[in-house]
Length: 178
Image 1 (tube, rainbow, N blue to C red):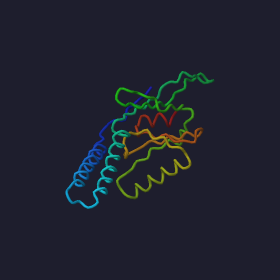
Image 2: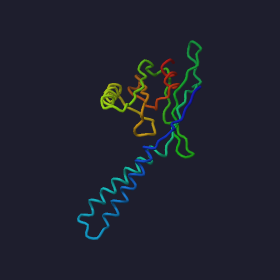
Image 3: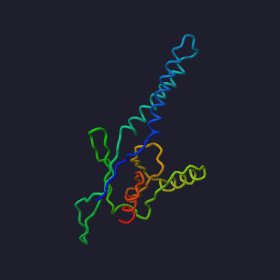
Image 4: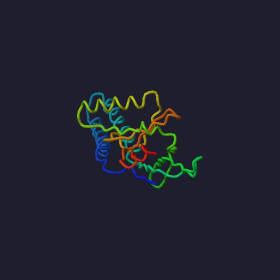
């Protein structure tokens, strides 16, 4: 019915990965200088930077997600075909369905798009809204950027959980009206 992929510019993410690798190399180089006191501290910092770089690379950079509204071959008592939100993780050539949520189980009134604006007060409001939506619930975040400008929060009351995907206008419209 409708699908989109998480794509677009991820320059800040790539800059963080490259920056972490460069910082690790610089710290290792400086720690090898003759007469450097306590080089193990610099080496520990370098290992921390390498760990952060590998984490960002594996968790965010190498992954793509596909978000689709698909029929699930179930027809309800009224004869209406039911649909699922299917989230597929794509890493290289491997595609794995990581989440399948029936649209009938979603709290359509609770679907919310939260934007993280540039101002400090707006960031505080966004953080407060997220904490209210996710309080005492399991959160499943399927985004491939550590800091996205806007996210769609989809509450699933039956599972006491919230699914987080990137905000796509058409997808949000479908989720709210189904």
